[in-house]
Image 1 (cartoon, rainbow, N blue to C red):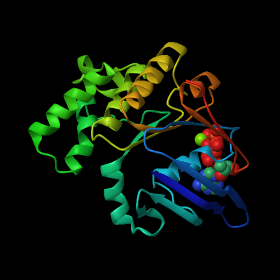
Image 2 (image 1 turned 90 degrees about the vertical axis):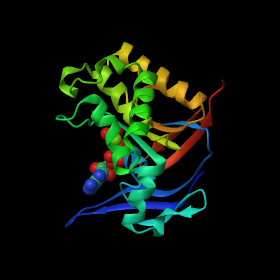
Image 3 (image 1 turned 180 degrees about the vertical axis):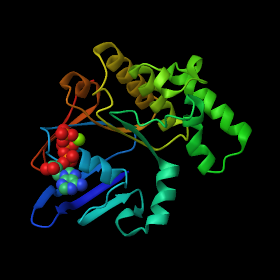
Length: 226
Ligand SMILES: Nc1ncnc2c1ncn2[C@@H]1O[C@H](COP(=O)(O)OP(=O)(O)OP(=O)(O)O)[C@@H](O)[C@H]1O
Ligand SMILES: [Mg+2]
């Protein structure tokens, strides 16, 4: 599903040049659950942002199925993101002045899905993560664990092919982190492809493959025993 070849990402400011990614070659198949690990600053978020088309590589190729995303103009990328990707962030990133159900519904509004169908999808995804009882609450009325479950509902409501999660348990206590991992593992078992950045070895073990990064390179990629 995902093919990266010779991918580089350089950040240039006035006098400093940082190489965040160096000649990354990586293939991720549909249905995989991949954990990306490595020390702070090694390029994990940069890689995830490029996979999510929030950032572009400086050079190299990113192909998604038969589509070369490297050459796609921004407007086409926005449509691609809307239709195929779901994001989960460490800090939840829900919109404060929308209720939980409005947050989850928003992406479907942009996709011009009719109201009744939107409601059904929102209800199903809230049920999926156990947050339906907080539908009319605002994000700041929820615990961190609940907010992250709502963020997962938002990520999956459009039935994306790929879920990208950057340290989804990074701001959660052990119990809430375990709940989030259960949900992600369940989604993967149902067929979702997931790429997750984590600092937790035990959470990386729940994924089916682990990729270790160092200094902008992929240094090792191992398949976990199931
Ligand atoms: N917008 C930017 N401008 C300049 N340098 C950047 C930018 N974003 C990231 N970098 C640099 O690129 C490198 C990789 O950063 P990245 O955020 O991908 O690391 P990370 O592995 O996600 O780290 P962490 O575990 O702390 O989240 C770092 O050296 C960082 O300082
Ligand atoms: Mg990061």
